[in-house]
Image (cartoon, rainbow, N blue to C red; front, side, top):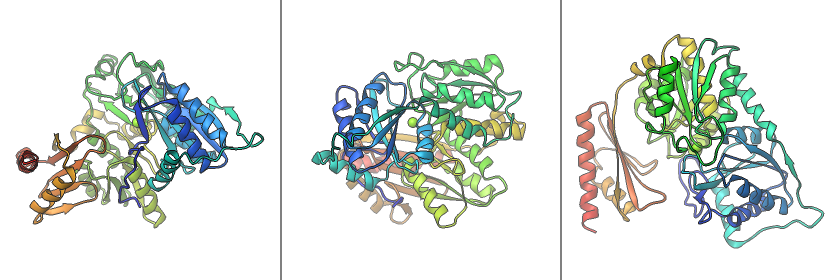
Length: 456
Ligand code: MG
């Protein structure tokens, strides 16, 4: 079931998110807790990022699950992948209170299965149904769950990452870390210094008002990081989004590393000397195929969303296939030997290992990768489904893929048209090594969409 998306009513690809006090309230979160607890048993771990609303919403989740008879372990502030690691290790489920990269006024709920992956669509639909029907199973007075505080458990995630690499591999390397006032302030500097790196931080104090930069890492937001990298002669800078499942990089010259190139570079390292499969959504740059080909590996594409990547990786491994690496072209990378979710801490640790092994600079490594032109646009329309069908018709003589939205391939150029899950618009991505070919395909597709929307 990893190849098809199922329509959910409340939860999106990354849980439920909303603006605090408007659509994200303790009442909603309490009901999610009651619904989840009603379909679970045992102990649920609850964690949160640094948002100001996190404590109130975490208490609402805990109240819900305990009222149905589950126990709650409050693991405090930590990165989403740290919670996922702990859940897989010893809990029956988990809930992360986070809005990831959204602005400070947002918050959200992400439900984690006992295996450490995000809850599957089929289960989310059952949970949503319970929520809408108020179908909760309250526990009697002598069966109500209890709460334990365990903020120290995050250390286990740090140790798991550090122990996956040769001891002291980062010796002699300076790294600047920008956790963006998020939970990675607790983990990434610790991971790197335990690997032997010299670590400097910017925005290293946890603060839910995000005084230094927004939770979404951007070229503008990371200007301070880039400056510090250059001024200190660091090997690179790393920044995380608001819950640290993603890591993005600034190279030794202060240049922002485009995330598809980050994927390709780490992919080449993960695949070196091994034959296997790389898994990524249809929206990732074709650079991943260039790298896979060089390593005699193959690429398996999935719908857009890290959960589809993770579940596809698990399914292929279950079939006896050799899956080496996976993730998205946004800095969210999955290392199957570690765990089946995006992990920003593991990503930066792998970068240290890569540069130390190659005795190379990040700018030189990025410079060696193939160059692509990518065009991203959106067009407002309420007729996305019809547009996709009509475009499919128009391009029926070319190579078409409907894994997610509509992907048209023409030589080395491709275009992906997808309906937004949350807004009345379609997103268009076009890519080619040849700038003119990308522009021509983009003009062709956007003109067809405009013709359709214009006739509305
Ligand atoms: Mg995130």
